[in-house]
Length: 222
Image (tube, rainbow, N blue to C red; front, side):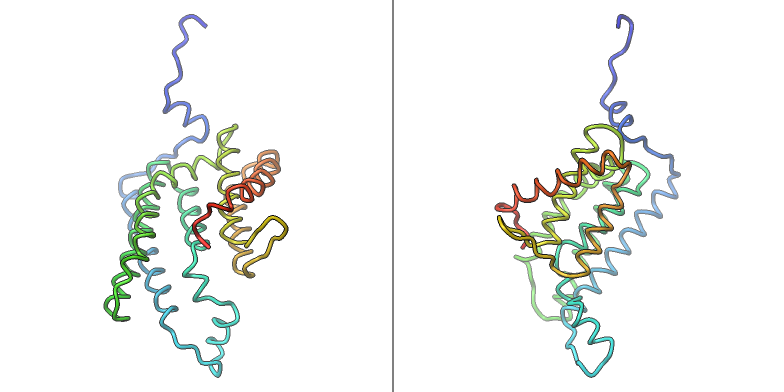
């Protein structure tokens, strides 16, 4: 219509999901909490790697039964944690910041712990995680918009479902195999976090699963 201003890119994104106000203090505290959480989980993950399990110890049996060490070395739990941080951040920019410092803390803690306490430097392996960390701000911003309105949110939700499905299930042309109960919990939590309304969910869920089968041949995390 004449006289109507074209909607800016910022306004278009705000229509998908509006940012929520947050004080500078709140922004800093949230980022510090994300950094501390990533650091603590990175140390915990490497500690599990180095733990020598003794079946005579009850809580060791729990770790062995749930395969907790391998679970925390896999990408599924980290994707779910990053998704939760991103979706509940107050804005896309804060989601980018919070998820970046979470991964930075996790990678640094895991790497330093390995060098200092395990006696070797997993530089080649860590390059994969540093690449994930570098990409995490952009992916985090996209994840926040997945819990929003419109077609873009539905497409983003389907993409997230696809990634979660590939991370939590082993799939092929004729089979679907759940990796474990913890992975099922991760998938359900991830799907619940991005849920916004029934219509979007019942479109994004099957679309995401179909997408997972399509991109499975090039999925790098197995």
